[in-house]
Amino acid sequence: MSSAIVLEGVRKQYEDFALHDIDLALPAGQVMGLVGVNGAGKSTLLRLLMGLVRADGGKVEVLGQRLPQAQVAVKRDIGYASDDMRLYSGQTLRWHMDFIRRIYPGWDEAYAQDLLKRFDLRPQQLLGGFSHGQRVKALLLLIFARHPRLLLLDEPTTGLDPVARGEVLDALADVLRDEQRSILFSSHNTADIEQIADSITFLHDGRVVASRDKESFLDHWRRILCRGEWTNAIRQLPGVASVRNSAPLLELKTGAFDASTLPALQALGLAVESVEPMSLEDIFVTTVRGSTHA
Amino acid sequence: MDSQLLLSPHSSTPMYAQIVEQVVAKVMAGAWRAGDVLPSIRELAGNSRVSVITVKRAYLELERAGVIVTRQGKGSFVADTLDATRALAAEEFQAQLEGLLDAARKRGLSRQDLMDRIGQALSRQEETAPPPLDEPDRRTPK
Image 1: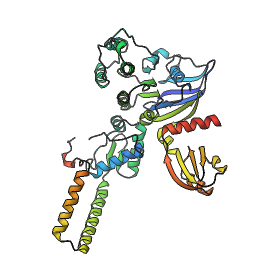
Image 2 (image 1 turned 90 degrees about the vertical axis):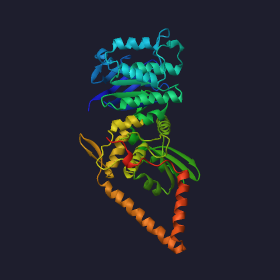
Image 3 (image 1 turned 45 degrees about the vertical axis):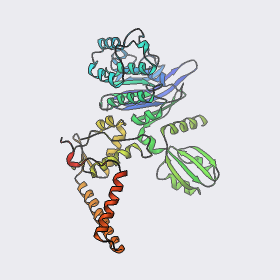
Image 4 (image 1 turned 30 degrees about the vertical axis):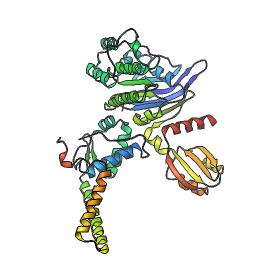
């Protein structure tokens, strides 16, 4: 299987922030969600992949080509969207569409027209008069209509109202149908990621704290309520990331739930009251807290 | 074949399990028949706005349960053995029906009483029940 993205031991040092030894792989045709708090390094990572930032060390490969050497060739096939990209406020959306169309031969005017309708945008309106949500949708339209093989989207749904968010997610779902196209997107909204991502990467303090396919991720995390006495041995159980005690109840969260988990708890004299799956948001917060306390 | 499922990310049932349930329901209702081609994984993922890996997992479970079969390079099909499952459902219905008749005899209900009660129960259900599934023979031909 070919890879959309391969990062090996990638480092980048800034005065007050650093990316440490980033290893990451995104096979072609997959969607990866990047989750992290502000300042975790999500934007830096995306900018690195776009060739806007140069790594201090390690290997950066995008669409089978090494960066920064192949930067110019690769950029044609990448669609990058972030909040710091500006459109010309004195020009119409149509002007922007024609501009992109002249540069990118892959421009799909029929799909652009379809997106105009679905995003409820007026092509003859000046960008200066667009709301924040409309500007975001306009930017995404300009990218999506090029059918780039790799989409790098930095917080594509942040600041959008629920209706606009739904429209953007629908457009991302269009990309899923093509097995040659890949998406890496960061979001504060873990629900968006949970829905359409195949794999999930947690970034914290410039490090990858977890990266695996979504189904096994969700499968292995459980919140377990037990009745019984607290012992130190509970913390030593595999995967236990958090234990809270509210006698006579104990709550534990584990990232290594399997057939042996409940028998192990019973062997410690605990009666299991309930076992619940966890949301991605809960898993993220638990993972991040666990990694900072360790 | 209608390839949009009605999935909710907020349900307590995981997404892949919702897909499994709804495909089984379609097959049981006869909307998808033995030998029918299932939508491709990517098509179903795109139409239902759910990740590819989730649909993949659901298809694997459906395969394991014998509801579908996957042929390399040809896609997935509704399995023939489902006739067996539907025969089981018919059998269960017959057993319940006989149990009902038995209970009616014990209570000494006349034939007319029994018919009336069934009619009442049906109309009560129709008032509250969701709209019925599409009839299998009304589906659009491929």
